[in-house]
Length: 90
Image 1 (cartoon, rainbow, N blue to C red):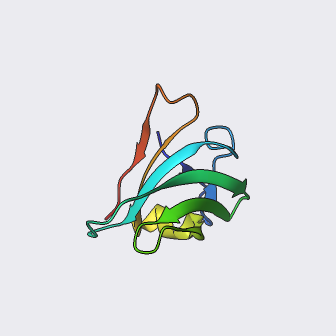
Image 2: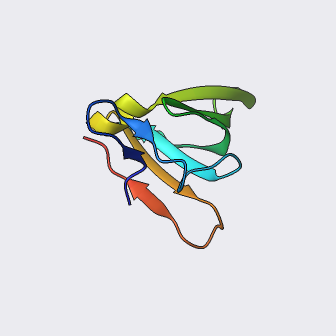
Image 3: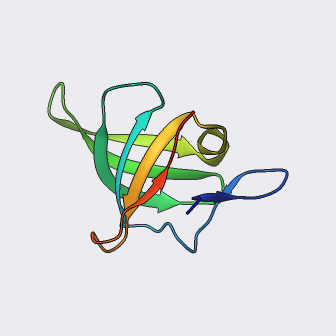
């Protein structure tokens, strides 16, 4: 299931990705995963609250729909923690 839609401009499909969803993501080709919670969803961007492993601090990461559509990010997300959706990277 693709998390982005759109013909000319990529946008997040708000019917399948929501605020409060659990998320696991990494840059395509990277070995470092980040786990967190989606705190904000707009058409062009999602904002994720996650823990930074290096210094045990909480951090926000913004993920753009255009970057997801071209494969910059590899993303797993779940609403119910039973069904896990996957958006592959490049």
